[in-house]
Length: 542
Figure 1 (tube, rainbow, N blue to C red):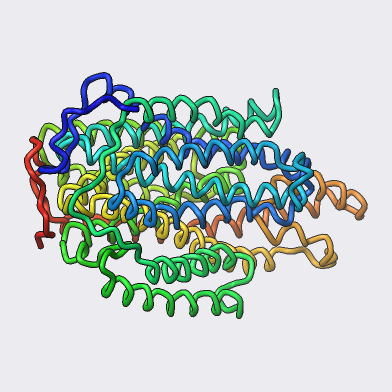
Figure 2: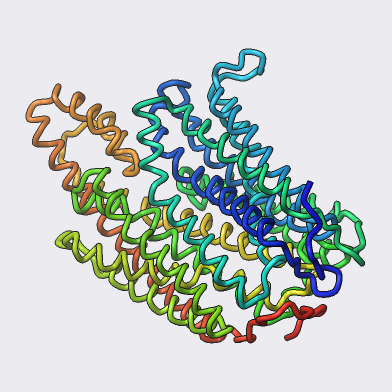
């Protein structure tokens, strides 16, 4: 159990830790953020081996979908619970749950007592793992708000954002190495020792403080309607690339989601202790930050998710090379995150980071929008660095701004709102951009198909995201046709042209969205960051 901390928590909402407590607490927080962020990148490189081992090609998208659904839901729910009951035990529960379900994910297919096949086991365990990840991410940034004054928070949240960026850089490489030299199961088992160290650090050194003056009443109606809103919404965004916006499945899910959103807003307006207090959004800083982080999520994933496809499908570089070309963006993001923390501390202001970061990110995306088939890797590299540094400046800003303006009693819910809206924005961005890409791709590709090619041979071309994996199969298929090699090359040339048109639309849309984000950040009110442990506002200030 943690040693007594020198704390003025009841009067100011900020915890004063002894130096050993601070060091161990920060170590535990950093390791937990590393775990959650690494898990999002390390698993992707093990995908082919997992599919082969568990015979689950058709169900593999659910491995990511289950994790996304549960982690997004967990963030606002457990953030609110921590506002009522304290952070420590929820944080420890999140790490322990994440570690335990990581072990189960690694053992998927060998658990004969579990009444599902191996792929279904993995999907269920990834869903449970998402709950732990959501709890960790909700608590980590909120605990920083509990420990440091607003001016100091930017520095430490910059380090945490840098940790996320570093995980994005090294995750795929580590996942590939573990898969090639040990087993795909090792990408899950590697979480265990790191998670156990984080548990020991937080359990032994972080104090278990119970918030005072808070009504501990669970908002059950809000919880049910939030689930009813989010689950159909995320499923609709996930399935839209497969079924289209006009399918009854997607339209039905979106309609039901909107009804549940109205019910959720009504529930929150009446609840004694709402999950997501609507009063927070009366504050112009919190409402503007929520809109801005949603927009950033949309624009950012338009680049990150589809840039490898541009490099492989249009520029013709290998998958490994395309991954390496993403590294400068991530390194730029790390540098930007550290820089924004120092700026916030020295200037006691987040405005400069917000405006300059959005301008740089918009400039980088404009450069992406100008790319075509003749683009050289050096041009991509320059755009990557500019965009990455701009995003690095931006990402910690909104958490700092929201925590600086939120009442102490709503610190967890306010902090979670930034993660929540970014997650919704990124999911919506991938869905909308994916729909734009596939619609234009199918139209343009059909124009370039040579006469006489049987429709059965064109099946793999319907999904450009999987063409790299399907190429050996295609070469074997077309080898049976007269002049098959030449026809296949013509088809791949058509793929290149069709992909270029669709991806250009995505990059143009991302640039427009990011230019709108510049305006939002200019309008973002600059509330001076406090440098002391003085009491924070108890009511939102408009």
